[in-house]
Length: 144
Image 1: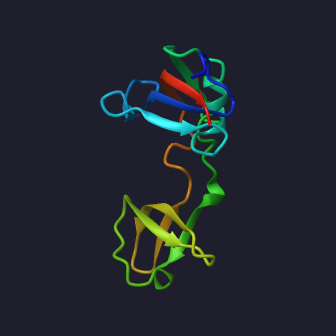
Image 2: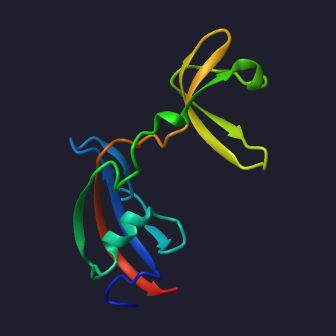
Image 3: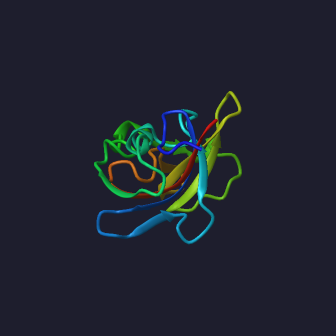
């Protein structure tokens, strides 16, 4: 095991993501720690950069702007979709829907509003446009 996290490490850590006001969003501190391969797209690049160089046992808190975290909210990713293109799915406002792209890949959208003819779908990440607080505790790191 390495004594510090390297850019290509297999890292075991606890992490907590909250809004700046402390509202919890996601945490492993109360459960099993996560094991992630850095550089493999399993963690946001900004977050990876923050933990590289941290020693084993370090516990650190980072404040990230919306741009550093999940990016700005992009209005062009909010689309009005005709209900006739939504197959037979039941559509409810304030819910998450899954869509299938022509290549078969799946992606999610947040249904902001629904009427008889269409639904307003937001394809931004749910945390886009929001600053976050990231707390990490490095448990271990190994060369993968």
